[in-house]
Length: 331
Image 1 (cartoon, rainbow, N blue to C red):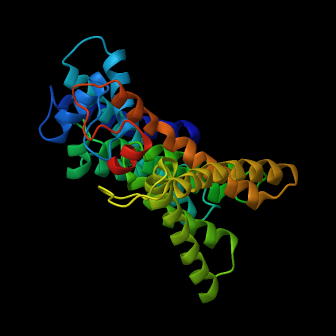
Image 2 (cartoon, helix red, strand yellow):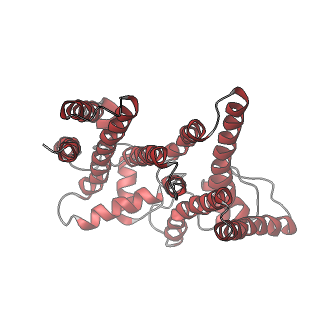
């Protein structure tokens, strides 16, 4: 048998094992706790409890629309089922890459391939039936979709590691930046992959010593702080013209308010200029930084859904985040 066919067969088997298992055990209607709130918010596109999960609600709505039968709660639960099944497929692919990185590349016989793909399948199956994964895979909660984002980011990170010496390898890192921004509309778990990405880039591209390791650690903390809280929490506050926080008692004066709004707008304009300049002048680092900044913000714009739906005054409209000021408090 061709090794590519064997690889794809084990991958398909991993996906089908998870999908069938979760389909047979999915909650038949609305589950308890937050799931009921998310189900209702998805079906009617309402505003759930802070800090919201707009992308998750839109994905849930898609499943509610494309499946024309069954209980509405069950249809929204299927978003978690298929998110989890694709996560299991990615666990298989990630494990294959991990094994291939550790083993001798000269071992290309069929027996070695069978051992590699079979081991990866066992890894994926173990994760399929793990308690926490299985529990999250059968109900309308954000954790299954959030885990999918983490798995996609890790897989892209490993793809970048393989292609880091090829032209255009930056596109994988920029896609990761977009996915991290997009994932904030589900859950903030994927933001934690910043530290893993920093380590992979460091070990792949730089000399390993104490000084460079400390610099890498500081840079990864700066990147994390830049995404959260600067983009996630403070950017809406800047656009609103006041500091972020819960029930903020103090606000800037009108001049300071306009200054904060201009700061946010000029930062975005500056990133666009930096992207264009870096691309034209072949400055890869400038292009990567500016492009990643814009892509994170582009992914984060799923929170527009919260503003739009809040202004539509749905029955569930927690905190009523109808403008940037109230959205800042909501976040």
